[in-house]
Length: 302
Image (cartoon, rainbow, N blue to C red; front, side, top):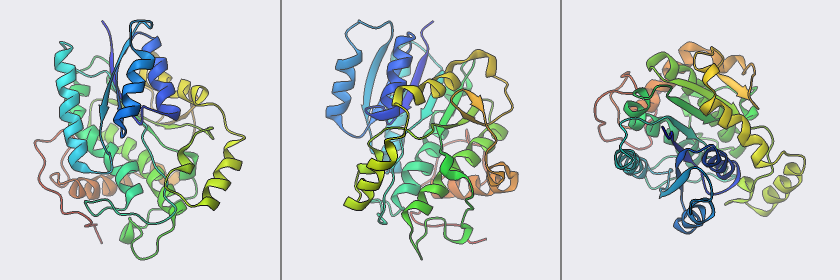
């Protein structure tokens, strides 16, 4: 039976390479991007029956929780239309880096919203479908940037002193802690993927000229998106790792994350803060009943 996967950040870079690899394996892939034009190009490139699988593009701005919830509803409709009552995998690939502090329309720092809260909330919304799958998987793309990082619990969104690189590093640490706690609270298998240094366009978006120049130099030594995607697809599809205990992987091999990413108390605390910021019942499991409205911009100060 054809497997169904959701991939965010699907219209460029690593996400596009992941979508193509899954379609070549015969999967039905629901690809998510911000630009409808790029989504149409994705369908045109990988559709038409030339490959064994198929792709459907959905548009959402993952910086906004309202759009994340609308996206989840659209995914549920696509899965139902395919005659299925489960989802085989969710690949939380979308990410952003902003040098200057930017707030979303809902009042969150943009990197915090896109890199952490969006995968947290989207996973919550889709977990009933993922839990019903024979081998449900959640793969969240983290980064080696999480090493040597600690969460600023009293100022997670760095409102008092913003540093774009620190904000990014914090969200990548959150990706691993989220994966750790998701395993504890759900029945799905979850992995955090380290994509390595990849030749992508991410550092060019919404950033000043100096940052773009540094990124251009840095990415020259990176691997291709297709090379990076291979490890992510492995985590999403390989049957032999369904019960693997390791949470952090790079290029298809387990890798020790930073000790801060293995702290169970930090994982629990981050989960509860994130649930409140997403309007979910505090302390509830990720597959709890319906959400309540979020109060944007609030954080725990415990």
